[in-house]
Image (tube, rainbow, N blue to C red; front, side, top):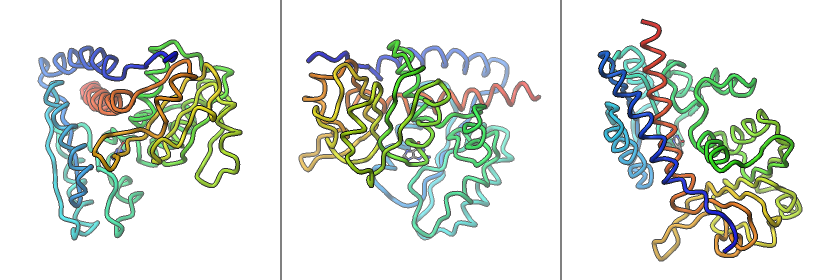
Length: 285
Ligand code: GUN
């Protein structure tokens, strides 16, 4: 192995300790940060994510509540609950776990969240703020990646960054954040012709495609920084990323493991955004 491992667990621990202090400081002044998480349906992975988010809140001094709805719930009922939470002074952040059932229009659901409580950064006004370089709540996963790059001293300005995946949650905001920091950015999708020709030119390669081990060593430049956002469960139950870690780590300069790379940073950024939302609410009072 030649690549340096980018340890998301370690950075998450460091950041959570710092932000826990900020949460305590707020609580001492009568404003404990609060997060409401909404989950619709019984997708097993989503249930685990939601439980982990609530646990992390507890460990960081954030009050949290989980609002569960069956698959059959109407979009209007969920929006009504969001509107109640918009007016709830104990709640500073509202997160609607994705994916939502097919009869939901997620843009409408996110539009109903008060923008100042949109700790996921998915409300159109927050998407627009990010796109114009004025992010208010940067989406958690790509923001966590930016912290990892900074912590490991990876230069961004003038570098060629290639993002594989164009989702609204990861790929698109990731590309915008790298662009904002001065990278030359290529976004690849499942339809991209000769993907390897693009990925081989990357100084920074971020992969969020949801395809187990799709990035192999021949697709990576020597010394590149490789960020693996994928979490895939193999038939034997083990987790693996979108990057073939064993071969790529022989060639890359830096690499994130799965698990223990980007994953712990996503929840950490949610905690940070929630505490920041509470700090802003206090400043408005
Ligand atoms: N599902 C997978 N990732 C995310 C995320 O970052 N936020 C929400 N709300 N749902 C998700």
